[in-house]
Length: 319
Image (cartoon, rainbow, N blue to C red; front, side, top):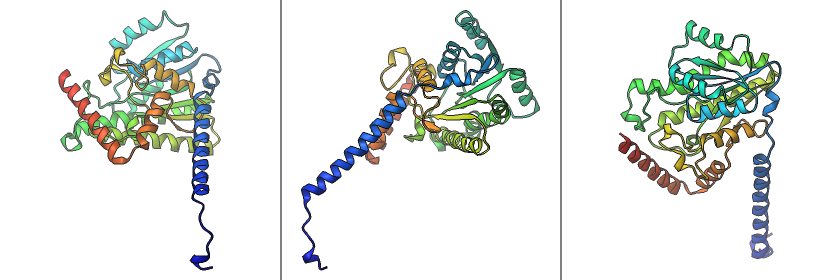
C-alpha cells in the first residue's frame, strides 16, 4: 500500500488513547502505593518462641535508639549496640522503667578488625538468646563529626572509616548472626540505607558507594535465602533526611518530608512483610523521591547541588 493510500490519522483518537493509557498507568501506580502504605505490618510474626530478641546497631541515639523504643514497645527484648559504654548505660537506665522487656548491651566499635576477639564479643552477646530480628542501622565514618568532603579531598583513613563502618562491619555481623536467624526461623534482617541511592549528591561519594553496597548485599541475601528455603525476610530501607542530631537537625525541623526518628522507625516496622527488598517506608520520603526523580536531570542536579551547598554552610557555622 502506498503512503498516499494510508487512512488519515485521527489525532483526537490517538491523544485519547495515550491519555487513557497514562491515566491507567498512574491509577495502577496509585493503587499499588496505597496498598503498600496501608498494609498491615507482619512484625509480630517474628515475636515468637521464648523471649524473642532483637539486636539494633548504632543504638546510642537517632534512628537506632528509635528502633529500640519501637521494638521494646512491641514486646521484643533488645540488644543495644554502640561504642560508648557510658552513654549506653545511661540510655539503659532510662529504658528499663518504661518497658516490660529485657535489654542487653553490645559495646563494640564498628571499626574493630574482624578477628577472633571480634567474633567472640558478638557471639557472647547473643549466646543462649532467641534472636529473631537484626537491624543494621550503624553508619558513618567513625569520626564524631560528620563532614562532607569531596572525593579528592579525602585521606586514606577517611576512606577506610566510611568503608569499615558502612560495609565491613555490617557484612561481618551478618556472617555471624545470619545462621542464628536461620536457626531461630522465622527471622528478620533490616538494613538502613539512604536517599543517596535515589538522588546522588556531591560531598558523600564514598558514603553513597557504601549504601549501594548495602542494598546490593540485601538483595543478594534475600535471593540466596529464598533459593535455599530459609524463612528470613530481608529489607533495605531507602531513607531521606531525618531530624537527628547527627544530621544537624532537631525537633523544630520536623516536617512532612523530615520525620522524627520515632516516626521513621514506626513507618519502617510498619512495612515488614510487604513489598520487595528495597523499600521507602516513610510516605513523605516516597513522595519526595518520586518528585525529584521525575524532574529533568539538569534540574534535579541543580537543586541537589544547591541543597548540598546549604548543608555545607550550616556545617561551617557549627564549626
